[in-house]
Figure (cartoon, rainbow, N blue to C red):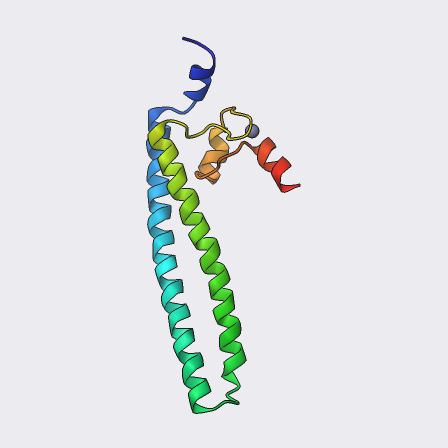
Length: 130
Ligand SMILES: [Zn+2]
């Protein structure tokens, strides 16, 4: 058997296990961040409630609301990142990892080292952005 199978096997099993542990580390750190953002948002909600109850004209009110909306936006991005990591780990398990989802060519190892959760090669990712 030659051709596509060989090309897809561009990653050695050692490279795969290195990338897998990078993804697992990233997943742990990201899960911690999600938990922290959620508790931040919960405490903002309590503070906003308290400030409304104590004093309707509390100058901290709008600031807290702004901070909460920032945290909510970051939480959304962080959760998306968690989904990307999980899907990369699933691709490592099913053998489709490291192959561009658009053109089916192998994603260069240099790109995977920077973004182990990449689903596309540089060319296709560049086209998407435009
Ligand atoms: Zn591609």
